[in-house]
Image (cartoon, rainbow, N blue to C red; front, top):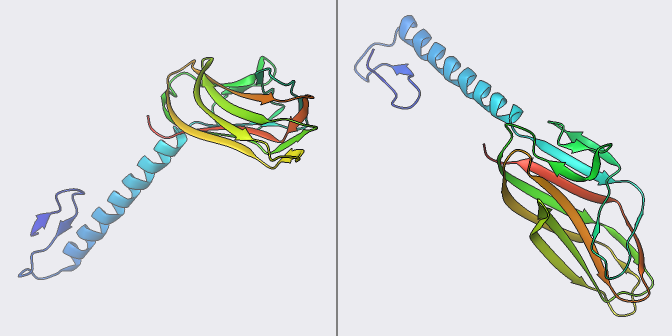
Length: 188
């Protein structure tokens, strides 16, 4: 046999060598082994990618000029028990052995109020803002279709994420609903 590829250990014949059943079988077996190993590694890695998706089904009242933690009512998916609706329905907590860099996304899609001047959406890690975004109301409008924010953040086990909402204006904005807080582990 002529040589071995430097990365995957696939045996192959040199140009001058006669290709035989044995050399073809060796190359085929090596390629099958490499593909199987790569697929197994990807499968193992995907099993280690924690994902949590907390959702607020139904409206939550928000008082003007008061930073309010969103209280989630359901978890459409949660791979590693990061959400505990019965114990604390305002957070996603990083489970043990699931530390790493996370992509985090939050959305408040429907805002209904009588009058407000601005709204803010923030993702906090352990009670400290990681990212905050401010939205200004359109003059004379009662509705904003969507407030979103996203970030990447390093997290260790027991770190927790919360989503807050703040409105400014009078009279009070009345409610928000259909709220999402989602976290996906990107790296180990």
